[in-house]
Image 1 (spheres, rainbow, N blue to C red):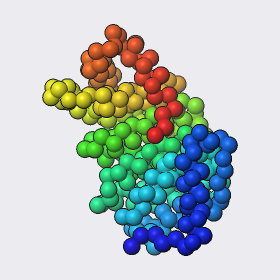
Image 2 (cartoon, rainbow, N blue to C red; image 1 turned 60 degrees about the vertical axis):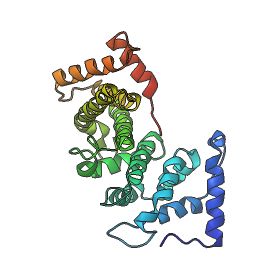
Image 3 (cartoon, rainbow, N blue to C red; image 1 turned 180 degrees about the vertical axis):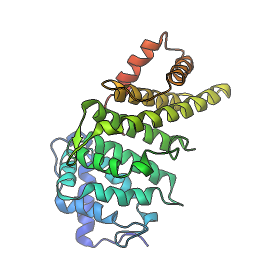
Image 4 (cartoon, rainbow, N blue to C red; image 1 turned 90 degrees about the horizontal axis):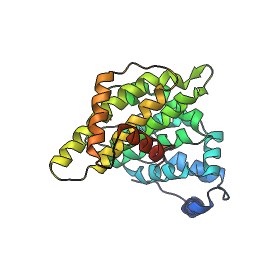
Length: 272
């Protein structure tokens, strides 16, 4: 199988790749509606619907979408001409399906994270996160995932979502991002614990701790950002213990406060 493009579509795809490839010109270059539609249509299929290309062949298009949404004009057109939150539900069905490649799952999480950052697509991303709470923000699907890229992608999603909580972002007809506060804190504490456990295990084996320490920091900032303006139910003793363990994992930190400052500086507006 695989997506088969005609000559005109191949030309459009080549032009889009050339535009997206010039990252230094993202604020001055443009794409077309047909180029955006080409990518969206390629991702249109899901296990419960026809069309598009087979899920197994969608990986490169998810990767392209992940990067392309950081392009201003692409994001504006994507947010303006497509029912994006509905499309994301189909993409999630593919990304979370049994047998889907881990990289596909990771790229989907990063794609949603990037959509949350763009002003042109944030509303759609929030609508999607609200509709997908049961699959996206409940349980331990991602907080205890075996693959480091998946938990890194989920930590980034939680962090970017927490920024909308901080600002009290309104979306839809009568919804506010503050409704995500408790979900973010619950998932971030669980993921922070997972990351610290794995970092300590790596340290004991004289392995690399930096990837898991970075994820733990990202979770910590998400928790703090979500709780700045209103309380959320968090086990304070657990959080304090996790923070103490995190400081010990990085000898560069002389104090807890220094760790907090570094977390905020490193992960403000994280995109991947």
